[in-house]
Length: 428
Picture 1 (cartoon, rainbow, N blue to C red):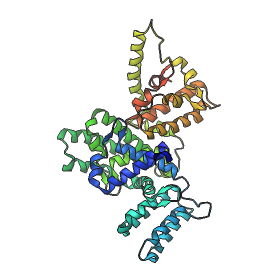
Picture 2: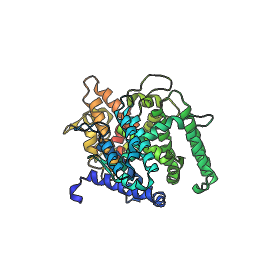
Picture 3: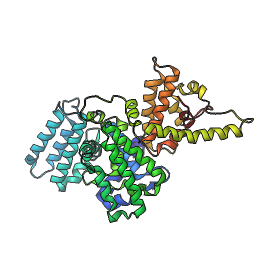
Picture 4: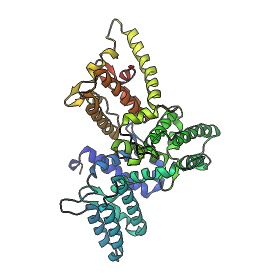
């Protein structure tokens, strides 16, 4: 049936089939979740790709179809007919109808409630769980796919509770408890390294000047920095359990990636606690985080300068008489602001070298490049210098929060001018 699916659909359906199998047999999930699939990525990366693409496919599933009905309710009515006592399911249908018809719930809240609803139904009717998950919701996808999307919103709603508590919040306490769990088999020195990191998490979470979204970003950044040095602890760290309901630290990072890529954070994630001042842009979020000791943009920029200036110097010395000098900041605007086939050069240039990128990263980069194009490249109110400064700041922030992005993004070749990494070493 290969010919009937696009490559995106294939990756999406395969990821859910495999994850569903792994979830049914937990031993396989524990063993292979972070196993590499060649040089492409891990099974967990594949699962994230599936969730990302299915989220786009499910756009519109919370509203009525052209017949004035909810496809989700129609699907659960099919499920009701499978039961020996269908009338016992009437109350469930009423509950789901109230969720979907509500005008007071946000989309995020509805997805959260739908996850809880699916969980309740699968728990109350365990003999029909497989049948339930296999049911298709109109042309959107299966109940199982909807569950995997909605759990991301459920996790977002849990963050507020997890970040509460003194002197340690529930989130950090859960991580600390993993250090004494024998199943992780950590040495005394490795426990010490992790304790230092967890203390940093505590400082971030306690910082009242950061929104929830900013705190999550800063934690992700600290993790990225940690695995650069202690990469051998990565898989163990990702498997640390936050709670049975929430999942693992790896699930926490997946939630962050989903929230950022889909731009679907709950509204209160973007406001300071106790205020109604909304953080309306990524630029503001980046700036506020960079004022803390866990500076995202600042540290990222410093690393870029160290690496890329070194590269430029070697290139200049060796090629003074044989090749042009690359990475000339004074001419950056002539390249960076180019538009190729209606796209920024950052996207078209990436397409020439991204064969090793995970599908989700290609999609994320396309979304990011569209933002760069709309906000800066075609801006009629910014000078060229302002555009370059803003673009560099955006790229540094983009790679800072994800431990695997910097190498890919910084190596993108912008024609003969130089690389994205060299661009990011240019000072404003």
